[in-house]
Length: 568
Picture 1 (cartoon, rainbow, N blue to C red):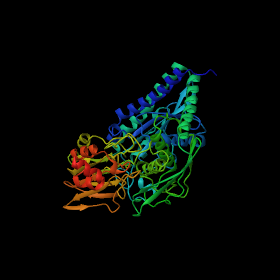
Picture 2 (tube, rainbow, N blue to C red):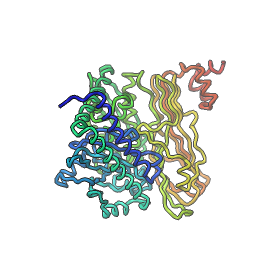
Picture 3 (cartoon, helix red, strand yellow):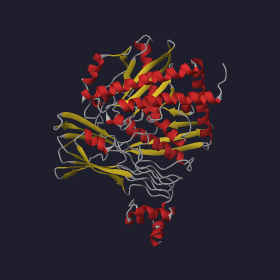
Picture 4 (cartoon, rainbow, N blue to C red):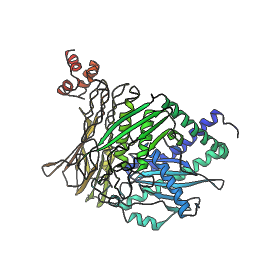
């Protein structure tokens, strides 16, 4: 086998990424639901033909899907062997959302398609799209009080949804008969399938240009190099055992916190992650399936070393001890709707907290760490139709040695962004009366955390049900090296002249609201980095001018540094 020259290798690497990027764009531009078309809650990738390991993923995809989608692809491969005699045909597309088979929560629906070149299976193409509803107890699927997965929605094992390019209408009928606003789902289904068709064409073009053997050789070499680069990065961390913790507010059923205890052992060029000391399985939906737990660690390390390319080789030096007997290894029938959007971010936060002790100059205080999942489902009498509005919001990033944290940044697990309020107001009978930075939520520090956001949604027409699965309502994102924690998540419902606060602070479901009622939410700010008393006086003065803190807050948070700033 000839050795690839560096230029060809780089071109093929970028070509594989471009195939995935074009799948992402095709999906986004043709999807019906704002959560996909505007919020970009989806991902596309290329996976190994034999074991489903990651070859490439689009730059516009959610990082939390980097790990989980390869486990979904593997589940499809296993299903093909056990139920289809190992046979697949061009045009076949499998659908799966079973969280225990390499998934996240039920709303993240995966399509997996075999890719053939020259009549032989070359790879698998796969994508994930967040469907606004998959049935279950509450509109949107984020049930805060589910005690078994069946209450969360329709669970699909890997089945052939498209057979040789033709959609199975009987399977479609079963799906549409078990979800809300079914008439609106067909647009997302076709968009998801079309994205895979785009990937099929573009990957064929790439192989036509460079040849099958050359592309295979490049894929293998890129995996080896990613593993080598990750090992080199890990080698810069001092050997030792580092521990960190993070807290989940509650499981939505039992009003008590859940604890993630992370122990990271660094030895040579490898990291070992042990979470066996974490809380036991919980009754409510904050259990995490193992694919999501692993993926949360992968994305956390990618945050620490962002320049290492993403493929299966990236994960080879990361050894994860399966946290059996904890809420981080959910088994059927444990409910899991909060695993991907919330628990995964607490896992990442525990990784950050541990590694800050090892490499403080390269780490940062905790980010907001919640997707702020809010579902509003109801009936719009003016349009004579039912609707489900699902939105997620940003929060503050933690401060770091490089400076203050970003305000209203996206969640730890992805690049998803809240759909524009103008789009939401056009689609749904709501009015955003406020959308602003949540002043005072950034944790104090030498470098402060970024601010969360504050918004208020008024129901304009019809009756609706509000449900939410959020987090960081009990304690704010962690400050480090003497920095203060960021501000907490808050939820308030104003209805009939009274104010309702969820008993679990950040989780509740089926809150009935009507015209004129108001939903108010504040998202967390980032943690502070370093001693607040060391903050530059000019930065404190700037924060005061911009209204980030009141005079009283600044005096309390920054102490002597504030006094010097005020004197000037």
